[in-house]
Structures are given as C-alpha cells and as structure tokens.
Image (cartoon, rainbow, N blue to C red):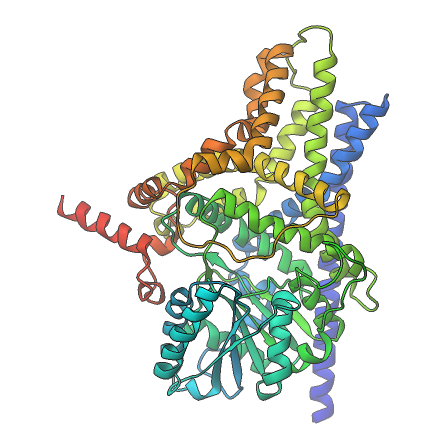
Length: 602
C-alpha cells in the first residue's frame, strides 16, 4: 500500500511539473511573439536607414522586456481572475492545503528588522499580532526578535527604553528579544544572518517583517499552517498592499499598486510556480535550509557594486530554489500590509537604493546551479531599471533630431508611429486595466472601492498621477545609473522618513531641478518645431516640467487630509476597515470615519 501511495505522489509531481513546463512555454511564446510584433511595428514606423534610427531601435528593444512581461502577466492574471473559481489556489495549490483549524506545532520566530526607525511605530504594528497569537493559545510557540541596526544615538536610547517596556508587558504571552548590532555589516541580510547564527537553530520558521509591516495573527497562522503541511516549501511570500495614509502621494501610489499588483502577481505566479519571488518582508521562510543554503556571497571589488549584496531578497529566493525547496507567492489581498513613502523625494530615495542593489545582480548571474527561472528573474530585476535610461535616450535622440530640422514640420500622422505609441501605452497600463475591469465586473469589489463612479474617477486620477510620475522617475534612474556606472558613486543605505510631512519648495527645487530643466528644453523644442504636437509631448514631458510643484503639492499634509476626507484614491480598507487595522487607530481611517459620521448626520 505504501508503494502505491508513493507511486501516486510521484505521478502527481510529474503531472505538476508537466503543467508548469507547459505554462512556461505559453508564457515564453506570448512574450517572444509580442516583442517580435512590436519590433516589426517599430521598424515600420522608423525604417533603420541611418545610424540614429538604428540606435533608436536598439534602445527601444531594450525597453521592451519590462513592459511586455508586465503585459503578459496582466493578461494571464486577468484570465485567471475571471475564469477560476479560486484564483489563488489556481496559481498556488498549497493555499488550499490547509483548512485553517489545523494544530500549530512549529516554533516560529518573528523578525523585525529596524534601522533608525520609530520604536512607537514598531510597537504599534506588533502589539495586535502578539495579542492575537496569545488569544489563539499559541503564543508559547512564537518569539519576537527586534533586530536593530540603528546608529542614531537618540533612536538607540528610545529603542532601549521603549522595547524594554514592551518586552516586559508582552513576554508573558510571547517571548520578546531586543538585539542591536554595533555595525550593520551586510545590511539587512547581515542583520538576519546574525539572528540565524545566534538563534536560528531554536526555531523551525521565521516570519520576516520590516518596521512598517503589519500582519495580524490570522495571516501569520495561515502561513505557518501552510509551511507545516508542505515540507518542501522553503519560502512563502504574501501579497503586500499599502495601509491607509494621509499623504496624497502615498494614497494615489498605493491605489495604483492595489490595481496593478493582483493581476500582475497572479499572472506571474501562474508560470513561475515553485520558483516565485521574495520581496524581503511580510514572508515566512524555513530556517534550516535558509541557514544552510542562503548565505550571500561578498562581491569582489570596491565601490557601489562590490562588497555586500544590497538587494538580498531575490538572491535568497534563487538560492532557496537551488537547494531544492519551493519558493511561492500567496497572491491573496488582505492580511498583509506595509506603509509606502509619503513624498516623492522619499519615494525616489527608496527606489534608487533598490536600483543600486539590482545592478549588483550582474555579478550573480553566473552563480552555479541556479534554476533558469531564477536567472531570468535576476535579469528581469536589472532590466527594470535599465529601461529608464533607454527611454530618456530615445527622447533625447528625438529632441536633437527635431531641433536640427530646418523649419517647423507637419503634425504627426496616425500611421505606424501612432499605433506603436498606443500599443506601448496600453501595455504599460495593462496590469491596472485588468484589475479595473475585474473590479467593475464584481459588485462587491465596486462597493469596496467606494462605488463605481468614485472608483472610475480615482482610476482616472491615478492615470494622470502616473503620467506625471513616470518621467520623473525615469530621469532620476538615468542620473543615478550614470553616477553609479561612470563615477562609481552610489547612494546611502539609510532608513526612510515614514511619517507624513511637507516638502519645502526650496528642497524640491534642489532635488528636482534637472527634471525641470529637461522638461523645459524638450517642450520648447516641440513648441518651436512641431507646435501642433505640444499636447502629445506633454504626455511624455509634462511630469518633468511639473516635477517641483508635483512634489510639493502631493506631500502637503493639508491636501492629504482633504483627500482622505473626500475619498480620493480610496482603498477597500477605508470603506470597511478590517478589525486588525482598526486596532492601529490609523489617522487616515479616523479621518474617513469622521467624514462618514458627518455625512450621516447631514
């Protein structure tokens, strides 16, 4: 009987492997066919008769993988959302492997990695989780490790006082350990590695959180149960969404992310399967293989691309998969939150840190034994940022060619060039379009976003937001990559300013004057040489021109409070706040509640 059971398991594994191989073949064909079609359309619009045209087409080809893969993921994700009764289980069968009432017996560490963060924020986000674990009667199986790499003396003193009080009040239900390193060797990965060396052998699993992460006990227990039921599962990543915010910038950004992430993640999980992503937080990992196989190498050479690996997460996922353990994502909204940057300047600072870390992946592509999908994911992470200078270079080539033309030229027609632009625009917004369509087709989803009319208005506002934001970010990436690769000068790996705050005009001008100058020059050339296309040029260059006022206005606390009260960029948590989030007493939820109360009285 045991032989027959083992044979069924082997056959099931073979069938799953065959299905996954077919899915990856379909995905590869879709991506390849789309890229080929776009290149053909591009050569029709811009015949390669000159060196400038050839360079333009080469740059265009460099931008395609990121947008085409995003489009393919969105298309697949939309079909999964609409055709599958349980979309999450369709792309991750392990999600259906537990009922939710199974006994929890594994020892789990909860790791909170902090560096110069507000201790009050950390405690606020942890307390409901610990209380929920205690109420579930499993507190003794969990231990919290507050892993500090803080260097600011004032923050260190506050940590010691606040965390000591927190541990004294919570340790009766869940053990709490506070540890601070004198040097943040290896950055966040080194912080976690230090935990592994000191306490890793005492636990089966580790839930990794950032200072701004929030997960209730129900989510953590679900992750633990799935890991217990699947011994071959090495890492399980949740779908992280933004928490309600009083910052207009954060509100609109996370509204857009909410729309794009679900379809994109479902589509990616459909073909990635057991070779999924890891985003470094709001995830659970199996400690024994992580300790044994996921140590990061020290990169050779000095400068910003040598030394310790900065963007550790995807590399650790690749190493976990190389060791034979599955890495999967749980693309289920709700139950896993984070706080997004509250200003454009903070958003740029965070993104450039990621950019520097992803550029180190060049030196990791040759690691022996990696799965092909893992290598693809590392390349994809690099291309995410290389597309920006390619787009900026294409715009520059077009501006120079237009400036050198002897006289004002005729307006652009509606031929291959216009068709190409329309297709690229459609693919760029495809993940959000897919989720918008799915939301509009489901009455409960429409109500969660505040109703069909407000939802459509917010979608239009977010599209305008992205039209302004995208060129600003592309120009920032281009400048940073130039400094990184030519001057060997990287950025500082510091903590974020997470609280909502105003951005002075002077500071915005100091940081964003290159974008403003580039926007003025580009639009001046279009106005002089092709004035009828000025409105068209604003789609690509308007964000550069308006970078400074955009940064100031989107960070304004007054504007942010007004947007929360008016329901601008409302997310489902604001329409019907989950009990877990209510316990945090978030200012955005309180502002919305006051508005609802006033409306009901009127």
